[in-house]
Length: 355
Length: 196
Image (cartoon, rainbow over all chains, first blue to last red; front, side, top):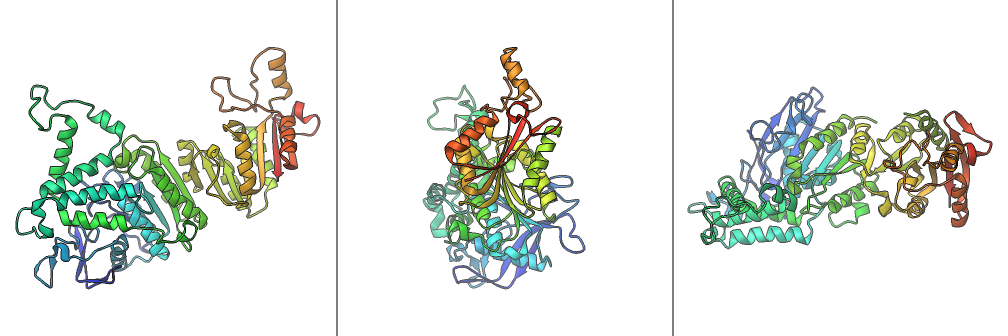
């Protein structure tokens, strides 16, 4: 893990954040003319550790994989507002000497991307070969496309949306309310005492339900009990699905900051790749090639949202490929269905520089 | 690629001007689009329903949309393309009438190709032997054919008259080459350039 420090970032809200750190990792080698760099963008709970053992996209990034580190120079940074090495609400506020908490300014996907752009500048890369990511990572891809069209040759937004629907905002709000309803949250000032772990765990449990499909839950858990001999014990985790969600919630709180969860989900809800413009105007001036991927069983980011992105691309004359991959794993498919993604991404990247 | 398909693609390529914009409906693995890109420098895109075929298109660097042409083409404005192509796909869709109407809306011209169900060999197989025809342009068995509509060249001409569609050019082929004499009896594949 490396750290890129810079003096100041002017935020979309007009506020200034200073100083700023971005945690990042790189894989593979930057070639002599710096033309083989691909920026990988992570989702809500991801971090800079995308590849290698325990990396969140380990199956996709590496020698001979879709993002082939033998050919490409891969960069992944933890988002602004995160809690995995980059500046966020759990960082120390230089003005007070204490953790920011709710003194941290509101940040947007645009701010995250502007911070990444400084990192790309710092690495001396004029043009990215591609930017790719799923879910919130896909939103950052879209923001790169509209915010810095001259800085990338191609873009791969996966299982994402140009803007959140009310349903998506609603799920995020349930997560935020769960955190804020936890007595330990204390208006965001919990860094000296116990953290709002119950609230954050519940938020994560709701999240996990939305990441799976009806069918993948049926296949994975059915109505199975964890222990048939231990039933009717008044609201303990008896069903396997209950045990799984509790385990996921409990392990999440060990690695994630509740305030980061609030700030980042809000950034996703605010995001509008079209920036209020009509679909036909939104992507004007974009020259990059685009490949949009969706998954059939993803009901959190349904295919019609990907198709709206494709429509906007087409109306602006962008060369666009779109595939709706047949997968049963719901929104999680972009992390799980790597064989299908590999076919498409490898083929797509091969042709980025053609004509 | 079969001889018949190869001939068909060459005929289609000749109908299209250099640098034209093309939408290929049911583009399959993208062979025709790739050929048109290479020979005519077209700005092409395809729509295809089969996922494996999408992989092939992406591998050829084509713009392709994974979708069902039966649901219409609402994302495209009127006359958005110089040519819309339905190569061997019209007879496979659920609603050819709607697909053709949409194709004629978004394309200034439309190129349609399909197998002739009234070819001599088909007539013999059905009329003499009482069997569903199988020949180079209808290479499938009844249980695995992707074709859902069976028509002759005369049927298509009648349809165009009924809908006020102008046939600008028509070329008929069999597995040995171009057919000019009794095409509805001797032609296996018809390629029609039509406009509204």
